[in-house]
Image (cartoon, rainbow, N blue to C red; front, side, top):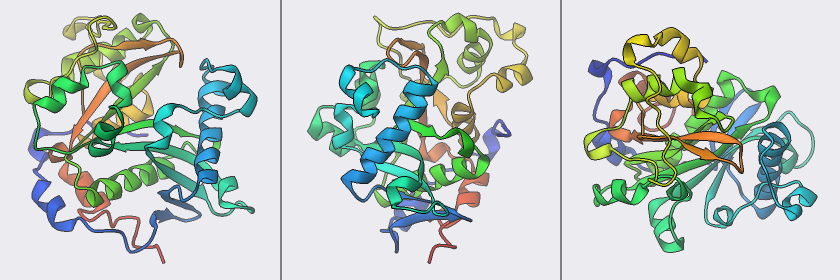
Length: 295
């Protein structure tokens, strides 16, 4: 994916536009490009199929550690699955039931739901409560468990996942999104260039500041700013984090090593008001960019 850093003059306040365009989509399909479409899971069977996709990516490919039951069932499952909405990307050209068509997934958790059910997943690694307390009038949404099967890791699929996230955020009046972005491996120093670039250039500050939990905090400030080659640093960033940066996201202070998933995590924070005008126009203030082809 091509990465563009945002010019601060191109960041606009979209909150008013969002409030005026919140509406339930006319169809359950949130977006479509050619044979790919995005929508929420409609059944337990589709959630199960999404968990199977997650298992293929996180366990079989990325070598995450899971318990015996998950290994036997070949499913990535946790307690948050039952309270989240599950965004799907489906390849409708694949014959069979919808469960056979799922090629990508994202897990969405709204603040009101999380507060009733015991909190956000990210709070196990980052001091989310402090961030939320600073914004009592805003609605937050956590994005997590993002994955796409290898053959579908294209710009088209990423665009559809964001189309689904954006349409969902509009429908529920979300003011800010956050979630973990991951680097492979459990040695942060192996990602010194990329982590230091994030620390020096897109660190969340002021009212949006958030840190890794003190007992888990690993410094991201591994290289001085003057030693960083921005072009090389950008090429070293995972595609998901690049995508968030393109939209105007910031990162929290400190990384966390997740030994279960064999990753080094940073917290992505994306206030809706930070979304670049060029991307707001691209996807549409009413999430209509890829929904116009939906019948």
